[in-house]
Image (cartoon, rainbow, N blue to C red):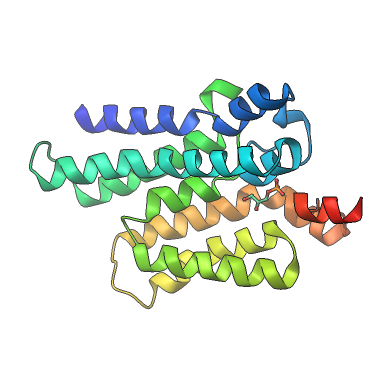
Length: 205
Ligand code: G3P
């Protein structure tokens, strides 16, 4: 029962739509109706600017990191018994909460920041490698979405080079989820009308 409650709590925490709330508070605008209609920090930057975007990014990472961190501490200190794979399920629950928030009629973001926060303690090398890949790809393509997709795909791929066993399936699942959540971006990229980043928009003005 405790394990099921943990999953539920992680989903609810993941569901807290920081990007939506901060944007509404700071600008009065509804981020779900503007730009890419995602509550993620990339779209928050378009709608509400850099500062609110950074705040969103930090909070979105923390809502992945916190439940996983708490679960690991409780497990390591034998306070509750949790199987290792269960901690991956807790991470996944937080990410699903962000992507399909119970507070936004199952709308949400694309889960990149929450995935990073939720995975850093489970697969630190893979996460760091994927972040480097993100920045390199973003620099060359100028699209956050292409960077994010490569970040997602790289998580299980780099996992092949390091021993992480069951965690590999977790990374495979989150990678798939990131790619699926970016389907609208992929079709915009193919059509050649992907949304610009906020800084590109500024330059064009
Ligand atoms: O992590 C989300 C990013 O890859 C794309 O965001 O708002 O351009 O769809 P957005």
